[in-house]
Image 1 (cartoon, rainbow, N blue to C red):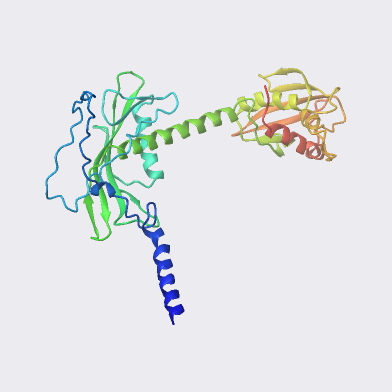
Image 2: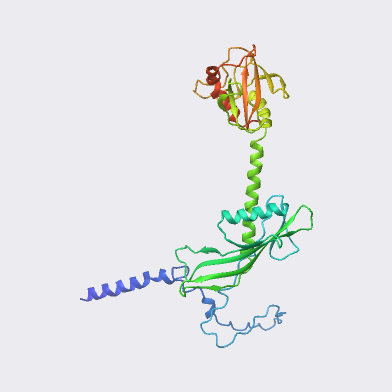
Length: 362
């Protein structure tokens, strides 16, 4: 019986000791989180004999608290986050230091900015309650953010309404983009209601940064598109027929892009251009030294028997470049000025397609 009684005591002590993980510092239920509220005033520092009094001044006075503060925790709801900075991305944006809050100068005309902001709201599903072009103002509806965390507590969602202002800027090629918050609320799950809260100035800066980031990504996309349309950017070609019914390469790229791309393509294939006449759309080729192209040279390690050499019977050819509606045709003519047949062009199409599509080099 005594052994059983001892076992029960030891088991109880073990359970009590094992539960300490629930309440120790950093545990699931941290009882030490607000320990500062139970702190006591330390005794006055005693100065030993023979030591002078320290030169102390009350530069940072702590206000006296009332006696009836039992149960009140100070500082819990205070915002201690650092202020959010406006992101001046790229070379089109600079910070507006003449105005407090979320504001920036943008190199863009008013119409472009209006379109940019509206498309940003549309893509991010932010409702627009009203807009006034004359005043340069857009008022949004509620932008809701829900808390989907595991331990959400009493506050489960937040929502904000904003005003976006597009106005003149000091420089003639700029406009000012400003975001102001109109209302901020939080949803109290326990009370099933929204309540207003003090917004410390981060949400409007966050929205402005999102708009500027949206513009920055669009600028990068446009820059990449311009590069892809340059002479070094590849184009897609298909097999088809020209306006006279001859076998030809067909592309939807514009004439300037095609013309500049031909020289890059032939250089990749190591085909010499004898001459060219842009006014007539003619490129004269010399295939006498066409043995191994750039791609085959770089892929010497490959076991693939298919290289990047054109299999054409002669050494002198002409490419006729012609506008055909909204497309461009490229017809290969032999030494007798006769277009090559569809079978011969189809046989060489994989090599030509890869060369036209590939990225070029400087």
